[in-house]
Image 1 (tube, rainbow, N blue to C red):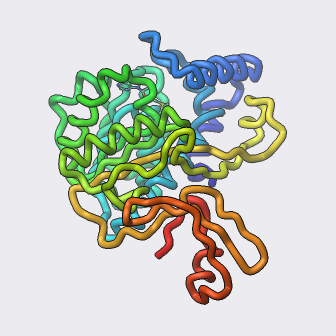
Image 2: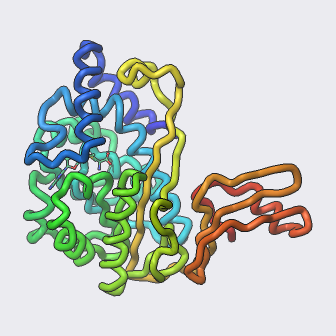
Image 3: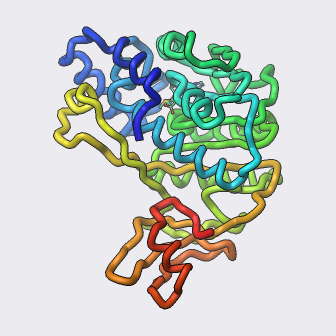
Length: 321
Ligand SMILES: C[S@@+](CC[C@H](N)C(=O)[O-])C[C@H]1O[C@@H](n2cnc3c(N)ncnc32)[C@H](O)[C@@H]1O
């Protein structure tokens, strides 16, 4: 997956003439902070160079994860075409770009972002290109959501891991109150990210939400540690992306996990593939999360006829039906 051309060009313009050694150093620092899930009272992207490092090294991957999660949400609720978006921890506008790519008729978006440096970049990337009426708000998502108005689609992508765990239940509760139709939360596809999504999922079900993706049920998650639920998206790396990370391969696999919770049930809840398929000649084994709340591997062979034809075309994250 690649960034939409106007976003890619905007990013290239912002990164033009940035000295590579400084960009690499900032990307290293950012990556260390993310990997350690450091919560030291400072924002990871507090200055211009950290924002530029994010654009070069992280934005393509978070965009791909968000876009894939939105695709799953749209597949689960085919009639859903949100006109309004509220995105918290908006960063450079990743969700805004992914949402307008999928639903070009989006009319209005409110983006809450704590870092002034990121807000400035996000605003300049979207200006003149994104058609939706867009309002960028300065604020802390754990404090400043009181005055906001609900939106049909509410999102928080790669944000929960930056917030003190004790503040999360209140934040999730408020995000659900602000959700007119569907709330999407995306996190890194790590065991810790999965735990945060599990906690949010449990809280949302308790509050009356219907989980529409990825789980085909509202029962407790059938996976147990050391296993964890996550998905993966292949992301093309630009030349600068490769240089910034000292990487040889022109792509990377972004692991992510998400939950989409809606005020409306999904019309159908097909089993979902929750691991890379294992194929052999005339057969494929899929690890499936099932509508009855169970999960496990299932073998499909030519003897399954049309079902085999569907199963062998499925990828990790896809649904059987
Ligand atoms: C990893 S970035 C993700 C940005 C974007 N959502 C994406 O998926 O690319 C997390 C963003 O959340 C912002 N953030 C962190 N804590 C926040 C808070 N309490 N309130 C508002 N924004 C916050 C950070 O400044 C940062 O821009």
